[in-house]
Length: 276
Ligand SMILES: [Zn+2]
Image 1 (cartoon, protein in one colour):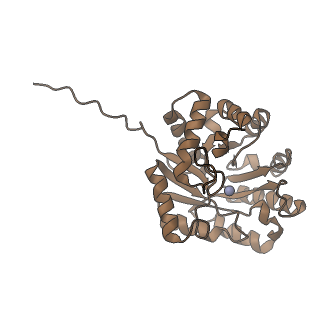
Image 2: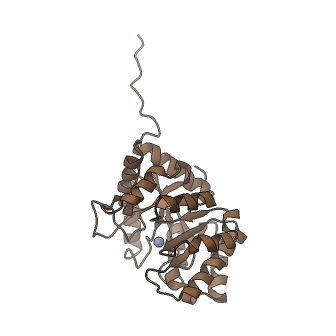
Image 3: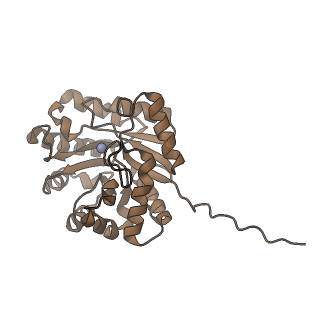
């Protein structure tokens, strides 16, 4: 007597998420055990891979990010100098980043960029550090992760001038522009990553971007510990909250979250040179 097989769940029914921007490092998330527990909560929430940013906490942010990446097979790191720290740019920082960027666990240069909202480093230094890191990314053949706050298009100008779009790719992290800016960034050849800001009540313009951005250029991130999405606003953000970003992006596009999860996973793997 034959029996119909029970319906098998499709293998990709709950595809894993690629967390493409988090600062889950010692000091920011406590000690090494607390860092590991934070990653584990992310995995339990469906995160399959993490990109930990080696930039943003002083001129030597790379070492703590690399430590995490070396401890976990599902974590990779970046190497860069944040615009807040651009006043430290010089031959020593450049040499350290060049060495770190050659590490196989480092899959991108950055985050680098311009932040004319906080202006924590002089603007000329920010410009110089961005241009130099764009050149470095091209030289080492890895993509560049870009931070842009209130630069009024100057980031795009510098990237074009440095030929950044002829290299291994550009990821516009925590994109907050409007649809027009999104089109400019996409036409230039960049990918963009959406953070928990897309869940904020005031972010209608960004939800239009989420709806209209080409799916093959879209990634998702938390930018932990910053920018906790609704319904966690005000708390410290962490990768376990990434599903809220995913669900909001899917809602904007009128598709199933699984579809966005799969596409953003594939896009991230392609950009960072990892097997899907
Ligand atoms: Zn960041």
